[in-house]
Amino acid sequence: MKAKSRRNVARISILMAACVIVGVVVISLFRHTSFDSAKPKGASPPSRAQSGDQSLIRGLRYSAVLGDESQIFIEADQFRVGKKKVGFLRVSVLNEAEITNARIKIVREPAKPPPQGPDAPQPSTPKPEQKEEANILLDSAKTFLTEMESSKAFPGLSSAKIVSVKIAPIELQIYEGNHSLLKISAGQAGFDLKNRKIVFKDRVDLSAGRELWTGDELSIDPQSGGVIGKKKGGATAQGSAEDLSRIFSSLSR
Image (cartoon, rainbow, N blue to C red; front, side, top):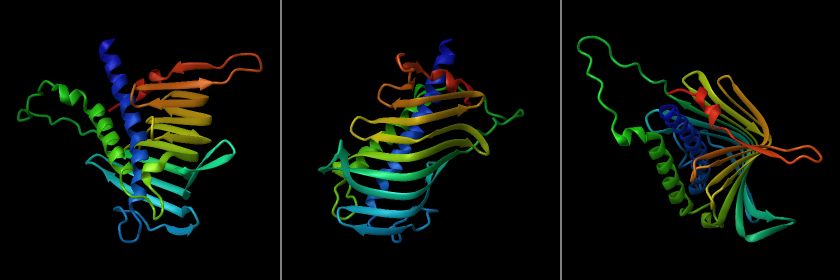
């Protein structure tokens, strides 16, 4: 049971790392005042329009290599940075990034089979740091996110004042080679940069292997490692919350 629990924790960490990496990529876009002169490898230059207190990119296409084993691909109809809306008001000192109709795909290289034969090296006992590889990836992503937040944003905007990223709608897929590991789609998703939380809302569909879950909200907290799904109750019933760690038992690496 302990071994199974550790595997589930590692798989959840992979999902959280993937979501945080998406946040990292979004924030990293703020660094480039000219996408033509400083675009990432494999990214096509998006069109860009500016007016007043906001910056706008239409037809966003972005791709980047993540280490030696993964690639990320982002397509979106529109990317905009403007004043954050609180209630019916827009607060001038707080900024929010808004992405419209985002399709995000993370592709991991398939695990290589161990060498066979008499000359194959003997398997060694995994070191503690190897067992925590997924957590190291998550911590590295969070560290990089902090670094991105301290960089300059679009002209006239300060990334230090950007407190959240909103995506509506969103489709996130994680692949191992050509094999789909996980898919999340939702009417909207929010990245809270201050509290480091990610929340999917409005008919959330989650699939991983044979496991399926549909609900109203999916929360991922990289700090605590929690993945919680919520479903609204009826007219008189209260909503229910559940730990979705079991979903990730179908993932493999």
